[in-house]
Length: 132
Image 1 (cartoon, rainbow, N blue to C red):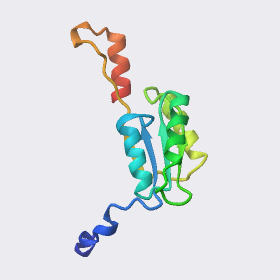
Image 2 (cartoon, rainbow, N blue to C red; image 1 turned 90 degrees about the horizontal axis):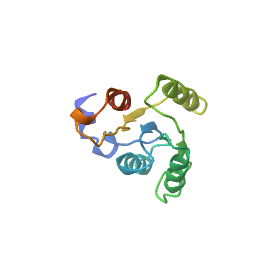
Image 3 (cartoon, rainbow, N blue to C red; image 1 turned 135 degrees about the vertical axis):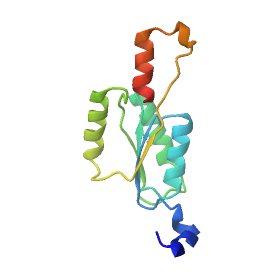
Image 4 (spheres, rainbow, N blue to C red; image 1 turned 90 degrees about the vertical axis):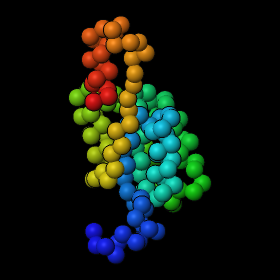
């Protein structure tokens, strides 16, 4: 990046035409990030969650945003990102509708709800699979 580009503040954070994949984006911070990306000019944002209904509801809300660029869309891609098979399914699903991804926001995560001493090994492994 040239020094002159540092002063192009109008475009430096532009997401015009970008394609984003956001895990854990059917609610909370992920949904807010998806909304922000669509409003900042992203052309397509993939909404990733384990629950198909939650993905669809999030996309419905996002696609009704009045100030996104014309033709911009949120696309539902329900998948469990904690498994290799889930990630393979995600790659295949996204690959059917785009040839590239500009932004990957790995937002999916969780907590156990119990202290580490009270967490069994299987639960801890599932938590690590999701968070890492």
